[in-house]
Image (cartoon, rainbow, N blue to C red; front, side, top):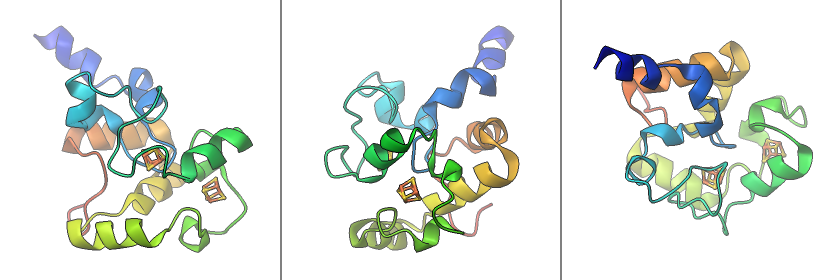
Length: 130
Ligand code: SF4
Ligand code: SF4
């Protein structure tokens, strides 16, 4: 039992489950049920839908692990690819903010981000609950 907890909270093994846009796919029911391999696997089944997502191909083309590696903007807030209307609307309704995930990765690194998200069991950072 304790061994399982150790594995689950080992952030180094979970880094590959950080999405390009700042989600933690490891806490997503689609991932835990085995329906999706996460954003860095084949054909991710996230709410955005990988075919509609422009962030994933942009990061892949640039060789970035996430948008946190990108220095085209001082903040992802200013990137139009990162902030399509559908995402802004969805986050307003769900009171979530994936940008804060990218900012946390920039500030503390992917490993600390993963630890934080495992602790909260969050796919994305929730406004006002940090
Ligand atoms: S929105 Fe794009 S980058 Fe984010 S998890 Fe979905 S496929 Fe990956
Ligand atoms: S911040 Fe924008 S330009 Fe930079 S990698 Fe992300 S989607 Fe691409």
